[in-house]
Picture 1 (cartoon, one colour):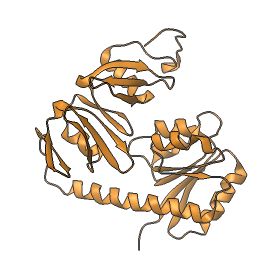
Picture 2 (cartoon, rainbow, N blue to C red):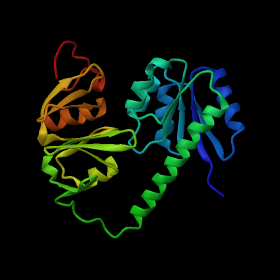
Picture 3 (cartoon, rainbow, N blue to C red):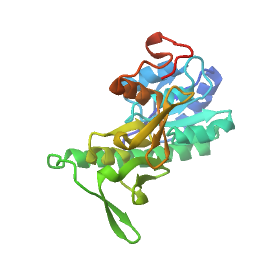
Length: 263
């Protein structure tokens, strides 16, 4: 018997939460592990653990659903947005959402989204279990082996400028061109040297290949690489970068707002 999928319901409207709870009650192997009314509650509940999927509204008091998603840990639960606003779909998927459902939520569509979550969760758990059973990890390799149609390309880590998750595959940008790989960002991060930083849920950046950091309205950066590519740096990663580079705090950090001062 498979374990139930633990679902957290987050919406500031009581009727919306009740509708989702009713739809979930019809689905087998699904367990509601809590309800939240705003983004802050969501982050607290996610930090406590025990949720596999969050059904998350976008428009909520305080932190929006989109802001809450960006502040979740990398290994946090899958997020399925449940919203009345279709215009945020592209931004949601860019931020790492698993699915995007429009209100009023239909039971069949919700079930499909949870099937996707269960499939990915099974794959993730299998990978994590396999990693725990491995022999002690070896040192990072000197070359990355990237299978392509024309054979396996061996890439030196120093030639990699960044890696970005696009759909199910990761695009690796190198001095030799761009290559698709089924290696996850987590696996690449483990194999690459310390000059690589996870700057977004969907991006890994080689700081030695980064030539400019352009401030973004989100509080993060757009990193420009030596290749001329732009890589989105999340607000959370931008804070870490500022500390590493000895830069002043950005607006709003530690409760301060420096107005027109730049980063």
